[in-house]
Image (cartoon, rainbow over all chains, first blue to last red; front, side, top):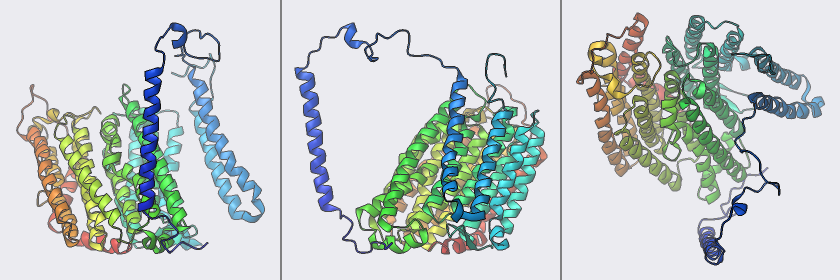
Length: 136
Length: 474
């Protein structure tokens, strides 16, 4: 791939900045015009029905501030960690033939580190959940 | 094959340390003494290993990783910073005992990442190393035993860090688009030719933003005060010293890419440097908390370091390297006092320093010298550092910048002297007992003070090393 050396291929400062400024002004003008019309012409009568949060047409029940049990969060995090790594392992597996033993060693190291992580969360009680296991 | 791995020894050693701490973290029963002595011993050996590898040269990993004097000098500084921070961990009260091995583990991975950062000469390698070091710190900050302040600090750090990362990735894509390569060796040939175009300069600036976050330069400084205050004292000491040194190194590498011919870049760096210095110094004046004060002082020092870097000459880079080292020593000395005075691991108010000269004369003296060093008063290493940085800028004719920096140094003197006044002239409300200072702490304090004064008076050896390292950049 040949690096670009003449300065002409890349856009220069002036015309770009000028049109950007014009464009920016137009956007600002349009947005403020719309906001102004919306507040000037719009009806301002509020009632409880209007202020209620929209939940797909169902009348909301209870508070939105629920406390989910924290193990769900942990499991989600563990899933993220081990799931994203699969992307690397798949891409290695596809080009297995061309990568050879060096690639095998590297992915083994990678999987080894993952296993260490699994060992860690296991040992620290991250996998134990349920009503019986009270850690602290 | 053997030769390749010798080049990588300091990093491999860090990896070994990380494995050992991982093993310690798996043990069932917490044992802080064992963890501390293991960390102290291995960090000490780490300094020796880094020193032994100073003269190595070569490239690794498909040329993405260069080992030269520049990187090795910074690796020695990082290993020293790590060792000295571990020295401060005798009473690690800020962190729960069962988390001590993890604390050392993440300090080690962070040091490893920064060592990789100063050696990386390829954009993606730089990014990966930077993220590894950031992630370690994201975990270290909220590890503190506390009442939610730590979590707040941790979240702020993560949010600002994630934004800085995103901005930096955007910039990396620009730089790649303009130069069609991710290798710094090739970029340095192509980029100076197109540095006048908006895409190149915007890309370079956005890349720099990621590193400015690490260094807490003006628009990315918001995290510094909260994180400094919210993190455990030892973690703050590490963030304030080692991570700043690594940031200086990588900013120099990236700025050197421009070839020194871009007026826009220089103007931008001058603006950021002045804004950083002025904001840091002015806001520091009203601080009551010692760690917040040091945070704002670090923002202003980021401005001073930038002066050396933006000179974009061999002298400028050498002076910035010297300044980074000086800053490492002075700041560690300040944090030594902070850690020892607030031995229960709480935040230290400046007023709590009252009567320190009778409670612990040696610590008070060390604090005074370190603070005078930060203010730039001779004969400390801080004066020499500032002198070199200003001299490099004068050489390039940035007279106005130097004058503004000097005015700033005078402003900073005010709040630094407030600290000295608290330690020497103010008396505590009730009589406090003498602070117990152990023999190793005394040795460490004397060593730091000696280093500050000796290298302040006779900097020629260090300066030679810094010059030789800076030549690797040009």
